[in-house]
Length: 280
Image 1 (cartoon, rainbow, N blue to C red):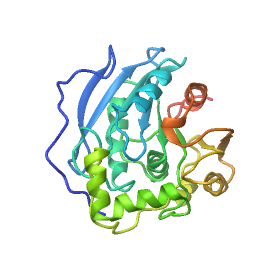
Image 2 (image 1 turned 60 degrees about the horizontal axis):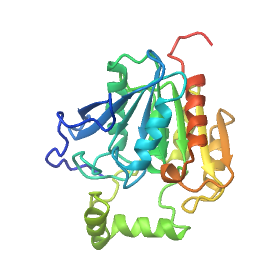
Image 3 (image 1 turned 120 degrees about the vertical axis):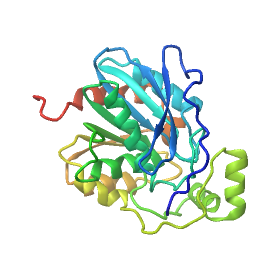
């Protein structure tokens, strides 16, 4: 699926999403403008967490803002970068539903490094969870876009899954003209109308190449989109290199993530993420 750029929606001089934050328009490798924000953390000089939201999310959505604020308040976190994937929110382009979104994450990670953070971790939810896995699994990583730890929350293990009613609705929204119209009008998500060509590497294949970068896979036992065989497949494919949390009572992605879970995720990244070459 090739991405088609649209006129930039983001602007560099707009109010910050939170007090003390910074807003910017980043440029993905294929020239799509990406709306991004940086929130200072509780530990100056600490790592940055880059948040990759789920499908139909955006950096200004309440669940993403809540996650960013909780991450920023965790000891060891020096800042949080949120951004809107292409086709979402104020970013340009159209969504390729997890394909070229890797380039958007690339731009956000590079920005975090330019801001001076000594280490950068990516935390992705649902579609964003698949993107952080594919991004971390690329070898070699693009210059300045490598991450020092990865957390994938509520992510699919494989593409084209239609085994649950919510996922059948998602596929309708993506593949049908009326569905794309509804997504644009009601969900403010602009979706590309072309099929993937070529089909991107599936998350279950990407995880095989992430080690030795620390990897955490998080999934809820009440996830209505992807059943537990998805996180189990991801952990198995990682060959023991991934830590797996199956969370009792947790539903799906950032909208369902409780503050305690978000704090534990941030604490895990602060403990595990170290710059390449740093002592253990």
